[in-house]
Image (cartoon, rainbow, N blue to C red; front, side, top):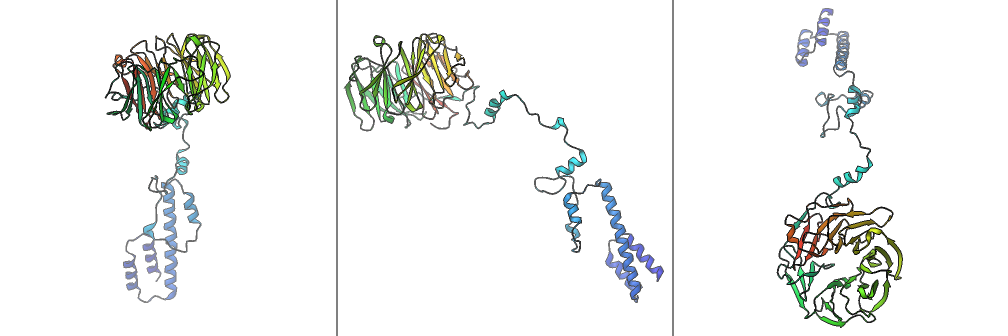
Length: 467
């Protein structure tokens, strides 16, 4: 009996693949074993199984360097009364991928390999001056205007269907509709649809012996007011199609004022006095065309611009004086003088009034930060002839500068970066002609440039996704 038991114990220590066959063989050799012998054999098998488990644990510790995850330690402490299926048991692995959350994690890796060395950690620049540049690079296209080159495409001329016979004095987009107008010395006012491909003509007005010097949309685009060096003016109602001729504004002694500006809130018109009544600005009601008040500067007044939706206005004098006006109280709130601004002829500002630019007869353009006038202005010296046109786009990111003294005298500047776009004008610069006016569509998607040759040049600014 004892000799047979030792042989059965030896078979248990050495793993075998077919336990069923072993049991059958044992049953054949010992058909009649008493209860004590069976208990001894069972104890011997249990002891051999424990020794095998010890050997396997030692082998795992040698291979895996004693690494046991926290989950495994918790599993070892659980009640093992419920046996696990050997086919579903998972062995520890050295990697983990996106498809599995188990396996060799970051903590286990650092426990074996040590913490990440300094050279492998990403370096963060401490230069705060690069923050704005990096922000612009990472921003979506529609958020920031690139300051290196301008994504601009030349479209079919706005007035390609009917080109003006004489120079264009006015090119202006409608404030709401996809429409624009041109006014010329040939006594014609033209309205065109804006699509960049055909730009179909909508309507043409001809006023005999009335060469247009200034024209603007009024009352939210419902009306067009036209002036000339004549003692009368014309108003065109876009809804009814009627044209009304009226005498000049009552209360103004000067009856030949060709230049006026329109406040964006639909309340005021401001006519600029001539050299004979130097320094006066006539504020007129936009609806009934009646004189409200007369504002006056110490010297001559060359140009005005509105901001804060027309509640505020800036005026620019030939002696370099810039005055800010409250259009509600019609009072001057501040004045600013700078020596380099003498012989000034043009001014424009952003819609919020935080920046404004002044053009002089020398061709220099000085751009100021209105929130801190102690800062030196940014001076653009790219044009050598008098700056007759200045225009900020609606977002305030771009400034158009032009002179009617040279065929290539037009530039576009990035206001935040204070730099000029190198790729505008495009290749054929002479094609631009002498520039008289610049305007941007309501959402800055298009730019309109009018020249002395009677052309209204239309450009698509691809950075802006809307019209």
